[in-house]
Length: 221
Image (cartoon, rainbow, N blue to C red; front, side, top):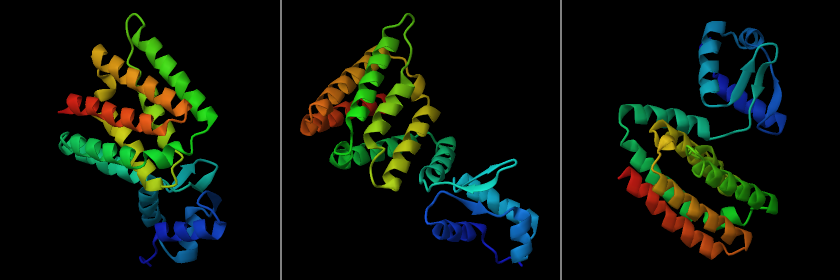
């Protein structure tokens, strides 16, 4: 008793299921009986597994394996870092710039016409919000646009870091940043980037993306 590791058990269950999602996980009572471990210790280990996003736990549905994502672990750690010192945001922001720049071509080659259409709608909606009276901050559109570009990358770690960045962006208050000249400049760039992607001009899109990253540097300096 005491040597059982629930996360190791879940990883074996994922492999045995042939995927990282779904799967029939026994109840804690059954796991405890099978492996001679107390329910209290299993609950502690289950709490850790949930914090990492490995499982969902719902009443009447039990424990369900989730597809692997790096994001929950990074989000938890980054949330703690920002609570300790918000200057850590500058570091994650610089990392995000490098990730987006280095993975640009791999990401945009996977975009479909439906993705482009969705991004055009995001640009349109964002500009409508900025031109409303009173103006609204199109943060969700901002987040969705960038993640749409990169979400199909075959690298769960890059995607997870980018998702965590946008949570950090909200945590430090930039999602509420209301300087209209800044926001309008950002969305003019976004519009041009989407236009370049629609034309298949990935080089122009890349240059625009890199140029517009200087805006966030100016805001967080």
